[in-house]
Figure 1 (tube, rainbow, N blue to C red):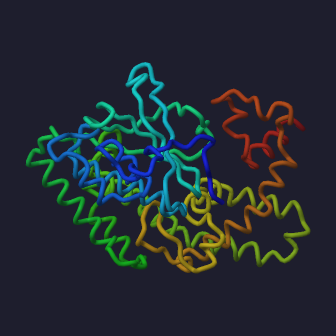
Figure 2: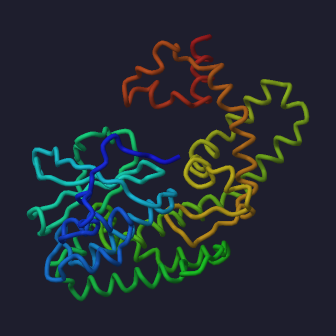
Length: 358
């Protein structure tokens, strides 16, 4: 499906003598619309900073944004005018929304300069397009980390830490597509546990360390899921050995309560964050979240996924059946209240019913 704004910007005059960009600003708009980062690199000035970063860093960020458009199926970007709407930022500064022709996703940039020259370009997170409401469509951002700014002076300690992070990432992710060796994962996690422990979640996740930070975080989760294999095998065996469990609600409730912690806490995000795309799972491999070249074998987590699917097929129906919270109150619970904390716990509702019946 092709997306067209109601009023796409006419980039250049329509008379026969002006069909190509006449100045830097027009050229930037034109080649952004063509998703041509090589030409954008030639157009922008080498001696300027953009969003407080040197040109090469900014172009790299533009490339990353254009890659998102491409993955969404976009082949060109449609351009409409607008301005910043943030009181504490660049309110009123003019700019442009670049909208994917298939996805409708948008990248919003404001520009400082004049009608022909560009002095600076910044991503705008509070952009008001003149003719379009973009609030319901995906927003693509350009983020410059503190250690990517032009005036950042790395210390020796910083340089060593970055070297270690990059080396750790390279041991797992390569330019070629590869399948994660689950037997190697425990060794890698232990090897870089101390490095991960030096990370500050409030600063390092917004720096060049972030690739390692998030990779370690995701792989640590996967290893913890993998370590639950034996417990899920026992849970499945327990279910299968009780041949009458499907027809005996007391036995079913007992089994669900026994393994509630395993499913709802320990394995909760296995299917919600990792193995969540059915079509991808059918291929036998999934891409690790936020990576392009690292595949996870579904077979390595087959027992955990089988257990989670079986558990969920019964659990939520039982929670709905035995809930002690009136339906009229379920959407208006006070955060932090006892009912809110245990709203989706079958064990909690069954125990509360016992107390009420005494």
